[in-house]
Structures are given as structure tokens and as C-alpha cells.
Image (cartoon, rainbow, N blue to C red; front, side):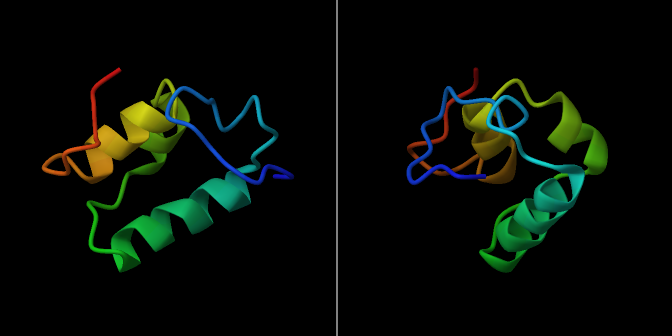
Length: 65
């Protein structure tokens, strides 16, 4: 994905993310201490904000979308 900065309202697929990149994102979330999203969650999350709310539910910046 040729994007320097992501915002919560952005859709990973609209940005050109591939399935492989989504799997890498899931692994990085888990490595960072977040709740690792399932494949279904990765493919159905409305945007980055929804994915963040799932992965880091207690984090103050995570909001449901």
C-alpha cells in the first residue's frame, strides 16, 4: 500500500491492500499486544477504526464505527 499515513476512516481494500498484507497486519496487531483479528474480521471490518476497536477495545483512541 503506497500510503504514508492512515486514518481511522480509511478502508484497507480501497487503499489497495491484498489478502497477504491483511494477514501481516493481523500478525503485527497480535505482536503488539492487541487481540488478533480473524480472517472474517479483517474482511468485514468497515474501516481501520472498526479494526482498531476490535483489536484494542480498551485503548482510548479506539472507537466503534
